[in-house]
Image (cartoon, rainbow, N blue to C red; front, side, top):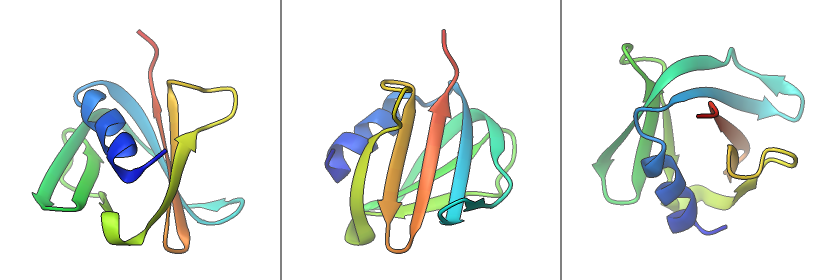
Length: 96
């Protein structure tokens, strides 16, 4: 999946309930956060994802450091995994 593909998936999930899991290392994550997805684009090549109603925490995803994106195994169409630099962010959307 390209940066544009991953960005389009996140944009299409705006307002839907999600769980965002930021990973620092394989098997080591920060505390997941959940709620309606907010996708902001503060400048070209940057997406900021967070959940309502909070302004923080948020995750900035940069086109410049994007390595790969794809569906989480077994969660195709509902679990997106993005690798950038040395970190990974998984976003899981609630089913309808």
